[in-house]
Length: 165
Image (tube, rainbow, N blue to C red; front, side, top):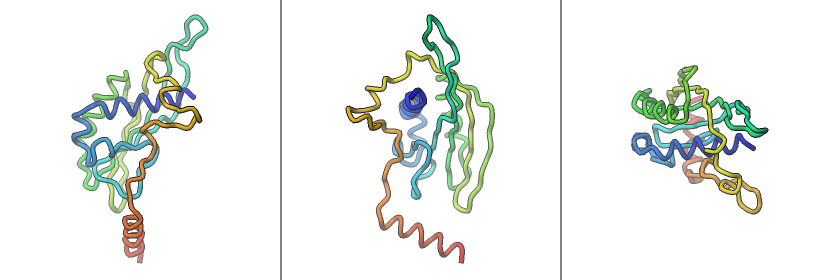
């Protein structure tokens, strides 16, 4: 439950940074949770909370959580330096410290993978009511967004097929 609240805080903090959003191919629409769709505008960001645990207690209540957050900066050309600088600023605001950095190259994409340890004040987290409705379904904006048409999906698979022939 707390992980969902931390994910929402991460998302809201990322999209609240205009310098970061201006460097992404599709603005706010280029920030995804867990997985990007098959067709994206570059550069894009994918974020995920790998773990979250209570870190500090007081008066039988959790005061602070410690979370591990992974951020992928996906590009076509490996030009992720400017975006990574802005991500670094955002994560510092969340009292985050980067502990790992890797790159991954696919046939069409170059990805920078950044791992952070973040300390989150429990009072900063959005409430469950803020991120869910009466049905309990998540209404947060961090869900994977459907931004592709059926034609784009068909085109993607045709390109993949021709690449592997």
